[in-house]
Length: 101
Image 1 (cartoon, rainbow, N blue to C red):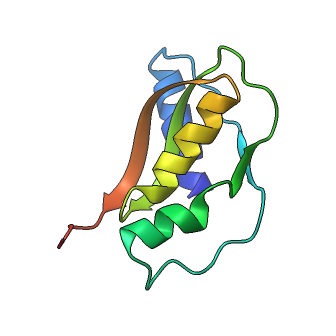
Image 2: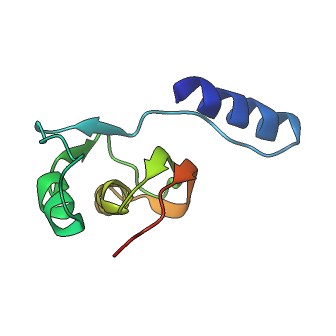
């Protein structure tokens, strides 16, 4: 995932857009494996599981994730980044599953 993000940042920068790759989130506590969890259970599992690595006052960020299943990880990431002062502009993902419910 990190290599794909590095390539995207390099490509965008070569096109004249100013992007900087940084790790703005860290795991704050352990979480359960989410594979068998429902959307509601995933949200509860991730609540408070992420922390900002530093204050992000005014930073404009794009959240990058590998696969969107229920959106619980992206939701928690955005919530955490906003709490740290960031302006979340978008989310970029590699793939998304099809919702069946």
